[in-house]
Amino acid sequence: MKISAILIVALSMALLSDAARSKDPTPPKGTGNPAADNPLGGIQMPFIKQDGRTFNVGQKGFGSEFAAHRNQCTVQHDACVAAVGTKPDIPDAGACDAQQETCNNGAPVYG
Image 1: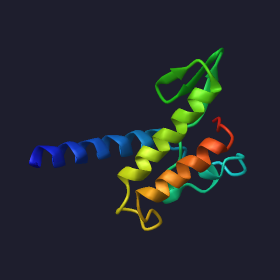
Image 2 (image 1 turned 90 degrees about the vertical axis):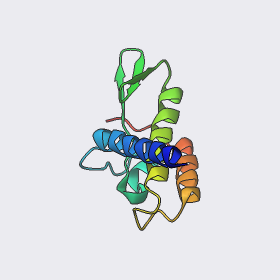
Image 3 (image 1 turned 60 degrees about the vertical axis):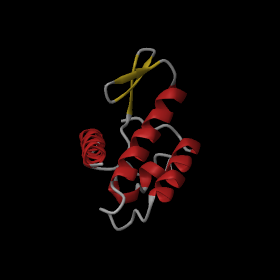
Image 4 (image 1 turned 60 degrees about the horizontal axis):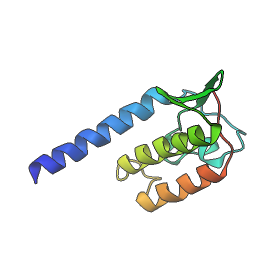
């Protein structure tokens, strides 16, 4: 049981640090994606950077904008879930799930 708790804490810390590395110090406004404009807990999604035909999110490359956008929403969601209980405006994982759905339905965010 102790090992599981340690693994969960380690994974949570890794997700939070990954989100912090990809966090732009000035969150974009008016991106067309409410999850980027008003992120729960201030946890910003990583931005898409296009390089030729490749759409990059952090260190991952994708062959389509759709896949990159889904990934940027997933990264934000996972960091949000890891922050439940540490940020007052993230009441539970359900709020993160709702934000991910909003993100998926919104525009891809480039930076």
